Image (tube, rainbow, N blue to C red):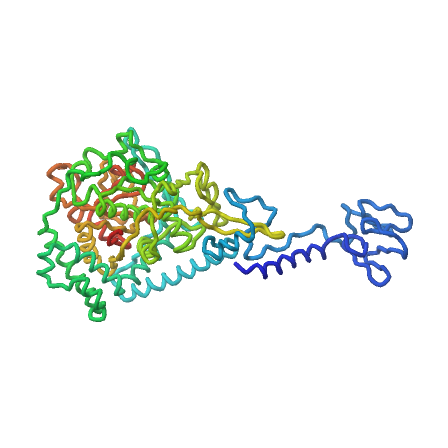
Length: 618
């Protein structure tokens, strides 16, 4: 936003425009006419010396004025204007840094403040200006980023010609469950369980091509960096049993951190590769805690998680409907795996494209439970607001990225607070405009800080002259500094080596580190046909290519080999590739198996776009 001094110039120019264009001028001329040198006027209108004008117009030759205008020489007035006069006054043009005109209705939920208060908030970093200019700038920046991402991916594919297209295809335009949204994402209709097992359909937001471009390109750029390879190595090394650390004779991460110059990135890539190649042997030698009994302190209900709020983050969950819980023939009810009970309750992102906020928050909550023996409910509303307002400003585009969200949170040492400090807004009534990137009805039925934007910040406005100036900010939500900060994270998925990436995923999860992944949503995630049957097992048709219904972020929390399934679920379908990954979703507990889906190893290996592991919390 410009300083106010230039704004004053713009506004004075607008005032001058009005003064010059007015029908009542200082010389008493007729509407739109200018008297000069003896009061001679154009368009056949004549004032005589000594005559007194009325309302700026002078009748002559006995003519009677009508509506303050003076017809002469047989001219007929029309609607109070003479020949050659402008038909109507026009408003001054809207400055780029204005939000709108002062006489426009104040946007729903906006708070009026003084100009001085607004300037102070901007100066303190408490508000970010919002205008037609910032909207255009955001879209231009996004288009430039799209082009840069396209170039990054093209160069990567040129260096790895055997990979083929690593961007999932766009949804089938004839798919009745998918509708494009104005921001390039998708509104996808999913099925959830009811009393008959196939119940009420609801729409969720999945990510479009822009999200995929940034997901893949960012992974390509981040993966080979020294810091990323080091964080990957530290996460994997610290999970190794001590006998494996000694046998492999790999350097301790502390030594590397203290002497980074002695360990080039090529060495770190080699260390990580060696660990991945030995994943089967490493995991086979580990005696995992079966985790069959909830640990002490495990909450009796979701409401007992510390910080639970009004339920906005579980708006379509059901805890009384048996079809919305864990199924008797699903993995959750029949098997245990390491760290199973450190997962918090399944939530619901509802009608917003906030999946990254939910997958990452679930990982943070997991680590809090594991480290502090405390099950918490953290604020996805606050987390997503930070992503969309501060870490990657986008007022009217939904979506973010797992790695960037973790990295931004860590580098800024940001504290993620509890759900009850800013409850999630499901925005079930939200609408978008097909012609402009506009959101409406985002705040219907919601009483906390909100606006019709992706980040839902408070809108602050003041009027100056003809114009309105506004900005977005967030009132203090966490004055007591409650909540948790995170440690580092690593993005370890390499599309050029999916086998090794898959092995690292197995190791990370086996060592007690859930992983946020970006994947396409296929038809086989639906409850119908050969997709997700009632107990959560995903059965994709590997003999034919599936279309995508948009991109999505979820959390991998465990895995189970086929060899274990026959013990208790002899009728369960075998997972292609050797087993299943256990995935926590954010579409409520009425989807899949209590909100979980079990994806075959092969599907994960072939479809993951990025994988980010969090090293822990503090």
